[in-house]
Structure formats: structure tokens, C-alpha cells
Image 1: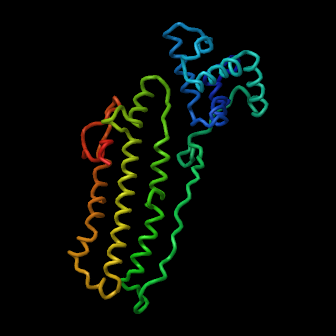
Image 2: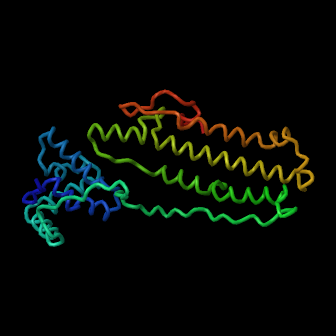
Image 3: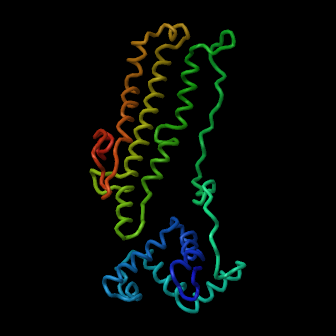
Length: 283
């Protein structure tokens, strides 16, 4: 049985893409409008309020959700507007009321590509240092080159990892008010100070990796400063190198505390992993 377009219903609204277009036009993530509509409809089903409930009580929902609800009732499901939406949709397809979706193709990328403005760091080949027989010898130039490359990823308050941490910091999941959506929200955003969720754990991991690479960079420059010739570097013992790089090794060791936790069906974190990876006060 094909989708019915003679009255407004979610199957038809989804197929036409009305709410998807609203999300895109207003800068909301895909699916946001649909989840809000379902949440308000669910509220009305249990409170007995009609579709004008939001208009009568402006404090019932946030302004963006109220604006969507008013648009949905006035410009989507209102009879004359719905007929025009269907007519415009039918004009663009060959078989208006019997459109069969294409067969699922596992090789197709169905999730729309999002422009994140991500620019990978520009790496340059190493051309400095002492050379012997066509091979690069150990030198302070090589250490400084490596430190500069790390700086693009883990700079002082900047870099790829720092930018990713900032982007996650302002991300908020808004899946809707029904039970499964709340479980999803808690899994991603956490349920309290002791459960940071996937987003919080990822932010802490990015911060820890940033700190580790930053320490490596600083320690390499310390080594290069103390041993400023190839001869001195070649004479550097393993014990002395370990001492010089010890702060970096400690930071790198902290990375193991992440990726060991799971989530229960209620959205809270299950036990596992180290407290240094899961507490919001550790880093």
C-alpha cells in the first residue's frame, strides 16, 4: 500500500520532506523538527490540550519549539496549505501517489555530508639536519622539525585536537521527549557529574591526547636544547632519554583510561576503566 496524501500524516510528511526542509532552513540537525512535533503531540495526548495549547501558554516550550509547532499547524497540516504542499510535490514526480523507495544499497552514503570546515594540517618534508650517505643523522634540526609538526595538531591553546574539543563542547543532543530518545540523550550527553556520556568522555580523551602530544613536543625541545650537536645526541643514554621524556610518557599513559566504559540500557555508565578517564574533575 502506497503512502496516502489525501490528509496530513507523518508518512506523507516524511516522504515530501517538509520537516527536513524546515531543519535545513533554520540550521537544526536532521530529525530535530520531527522529534519536537512527536514530543508535543505526546504531551497533548496525556494532558488533553488541543493543538492551540502552545499558543495559549508561551512558557510551555522553548521559543524555537513553539515556532515550529505554530508553523506545523498553520503551514503544514492546515487543509489549504497541505493541498498546496501535495500539489507541489506531485508536480515534481512521475507517479504522485505510488512512489516506491529505492532498494537499500549498502555502498550508498545515505547520511548527508556535513561541511565541518575541517582543514587538515599541512605537513612539510624534512630537509634539514646532518646527512651521511644519503641518510638523515640524529640532529637537533630533526627534533625541532618533529616538534613543529606536532604543534599543528597540539599547539598552545590551538590545534586540531583543541578545535575538536571546542566543537563538542557546544554540541547538544535534542532527540525528543519519548523514553528511548532520553536513553539516547543520556548515553551521548551523560546523566550527571559522574556520568559524562560519550560526548564528555570524548572531550576528555581529546584533551588528554592534546596534553600528551604537547608534552612530547616540549620534552623534545628540551632534549634538543640540552644536546645541541649530533655527537652529544648519539651519546645520549636510554636512561637519560627516559628521564628527559618522563613527563610525556606519563601523559601518554593517561590515554589508556579511555574507551573501557560501556553504557547500560538506562543510559548510565557501567563500571570499568579508570577514574581518571571518567571524572570531570580529573583533568
